[in-house]
Amino acid sequence: MSHARGQLMSIHVGQCGNQIGQSFWKTLCDEHAIDGRGRMTCEESLHDDKDVFFYQADDDHYVPRAVLVDLEPRVINGIMASENFSRLFNPDNVYMSTHGGGAGNNWASGYGQGGEVYEQILDIIERESENSDQMNGFLFTHSVSGGTGSGMGSLILEKIRDRFPKKIILTFSVFANHGDTSDVIVHPYNSVLSMERLIDFPDHVVVIDNAALNRLAAGKFETQQPTFDHINSLVVRIMSTSTATFRFDSHVLTSIRSLFISPMQPLHFIQAGFSPVVDPNESFTRKTSVNDVVRNLLKPSSMMVSTASMTKPTHCMLSAYLFLQGQITSTDVNTVCLSENHSINAIRRAPWDFTNPLRILHTPSSPYIKPQYKVSGLMLNNNTSIAPLFERILQQFARLRSKNAFIDRFQKEEGFSVDMMDSSAERVQELIDLYSEAEKPEFLG
Image (cartoon, rainbow, N blue to C red; front, side):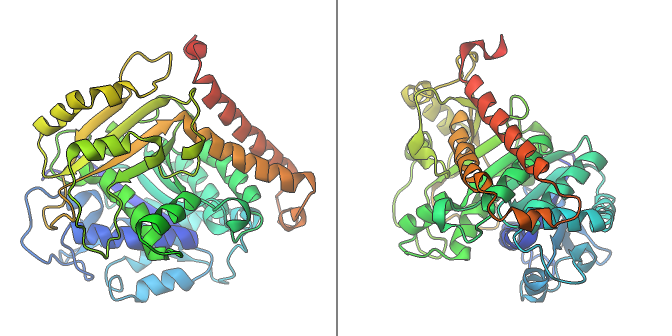
């Protein structure tokens, strides 16, 4: 295939970001028939464009366009020593702090340490971009609730936007379990500080709600305590399906530049859902159909955010893609659009938008893997119903901030002031207000 689609670089920051990255690259290797040494495992297909995420070294083996960053070495060392990856990733594309102390689940520490070393990280990113003849953008994985992924991740996003102002940035941002279930007591501070940077710098943010993923995995995978592998399998399925049209033979949405799911900035926070949801380690015995998959994905409860049960009549879809994969044709897609017309018309669109905000696309699958099910679907949904998630984070922030709880942990970091925290909270409130305004007829007036 031609390289007209352009290339993408993935950047993985912090423990969570790198664990997702490890699962993502395992999936990409499987889908492109590449083994742990970067070699093809079978004859190459004409319907496969590896160049989007891989380049070929001088000896022709494939190397991921990936950068791995962390302030403590455990996770990355584990990845680089693993059987699947020990000879796959470019070791020059890894940054680990020399002291290895991490950021202690403190955004201010991660951001401050990032300020000391970001030039080294940007050098890696710039060098990797020079391996591309048409770098279109970046996929970025991180958590907003800890220290490195949130704090250092914020700084790296800031610097990437400054250094590559015209490239697309798509983040997969993991939000903590809410209430008492998060293992990071200061996660509301970290999340609010990260949110300001997610408002300002990426083009699209796919919200990965850990609380919703845990509940979904517990229900679908028949386990009380879902493992990292269970959760990561859900996240990676979102990532792999949403990039499939870039990587395989497709006539629609052939590059990240054609992904128009954010009608205006900063209303670019995306929910995701897919159907069917199955344990990747179990056999799948139910029958799937295009109609069932579409019908399931049009239900608000299918979105993997914990605000799905808080849907209000005023919430509306701003823009959405529904990707269908499997044994289907373009005719099937057209037919389902007609047969599901009632459901699709029932979508609440913005009162100022007279077009259909939903695009249904037939998305190619890997030519090397037999699919687990006949039909599957992914929905990326830019919907104002995301706002309650941000409202809840602000409420948690306000409870801590009103008591100045744990504030000294942040104040001791050089260059940090409480004003930064309060300013970030104001920006999050402005975003919530903007989503509310987008539900009104006079929004564009």
